Amino acid sequence: MRGRTVIGRAVGLLLAAGLPAAAFAQDDGLQPYQLVRSLQLIQDRIAGGDHAAMPMQAKLLEMTDARLRAADAEDFKDPKNFRALLVYGMSGGNPVTVAAAASRATTDPQSLAVAKGIVAYLNGRPAAAIEILKPIDPMSVPPDLGAFLALVKGSLLATDEPAAALTLLDEARLLSPGTLVEEAALRRSVGLAVAQGDAARFALASTQYVAGYLYSPYASQFADSFVSGVIQLHMSISQDKLADITSMMDPEREKVIYLRIARRAAIDGLSDLSAFASARAEQGRSGKGNQDDPRAVLYSSLSTVTSATIDDVRTRLGKIDRGKLSESDRALLDAAQAVAGEVVAPVPAASKDETEAAEPAKIDTAKPAAEAEPVSQADAEALPPVEGAASEQPAVAAAAKPADSPAAAPAPPASPATAEATAQAAASAPTQPETPPVLPASAPAAAAGLDPHDPTDAAMLNARRQLDQIDQLLGAAPK
Image (cartoon, rainbow, N blue to C red; front, side):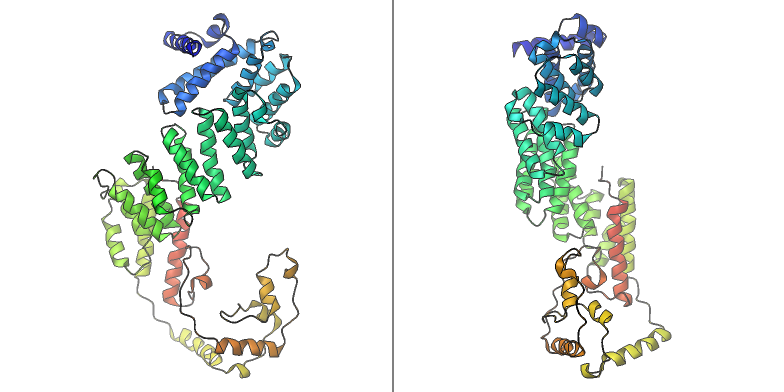
């Protein structure tokens, strides 16, 4: 530890004096591993929230690069210097420098393989990198290298093998606690847990990140993953658990997180979550409310913009100070007001032609089932299954199967007797109480129980479509 302190002071003096990095790295006699350890110390300070150390990180990367470019085979006879070369590469180093220095080194085959894999990783060739690095166990190499190796492998396997990636990220944290490696591993674990649908893992990783790295300059990436995770896993994460996690944040960050959750939830039609998040954003902490924050008012109004309280919603939307909203939220306000206006717009009267065209349809629907015209095979296959009655049409059941399923093969045509029996079963089936499911704004008209030919339902459908487009047009999170 005393050696690290001396190195840190030397680096501080260098920066204060403004000396050229290359001259310091070559003339002061520091070994590559000493410079890399100094770089790691700076990066760990950054992970803990010391943003002022970021310029120093850039300077140390420059100094380390110059030293490694000047290193010869004699330097790399010390295993610590070669491992430092690899760690430098995985800490944001120059792949050209890593490749050139590794070519001059004489070391064991596994270390050379790691160098080759890191160069492939840094040059944007993930398939080649994972093919080289996959056989190497991070727990079998020295911890200073193993932690970075586990982090890189976990990142590479995140898409194709998420379970294995999570294990590797855990190993990275185990080998290097309290460092930038752990910060990155936790941050990536949050996103992977969401992809896996693992609410417990998501909540644990989020809690650990907030407790240790909330002030990291990379915390905005965590916030993105956290908000997305809350939306995607809303059925598995209780509001109490969400409140426990956010309670560890400072009041301003907590408010922003709840505003972002409220916005996404409102757009996705998650009324309960939107109402909860909006209320938390408005309540604030320590008695300091945020009722005057126009974003909270806007997002809470979005979740009820097509409800029975639409007049109240329109009044709230009309009182929002547009000047306090971002450009994207002003557009969101315009969309919400347009939707609210369409919901309360007078229903246009049906024209005479439309009324006359509807009469034959009424007459046809009044015919008994026995007098109905025969149903063709194509029409039968298009009929939806009758709720409360078992469908006797194999084609209907097959339509619900995946296209590549053996059961998806074309079924024989239904006989007239079968069609008649199905119609009679539908007529005699008891009426089910209507309990419409909670559907996103993008739900099809039939699934939402709305008739696109009915003027009132058409207005509601148009409102839903506009809400569905909001997230596409205004997907950026509020600043």
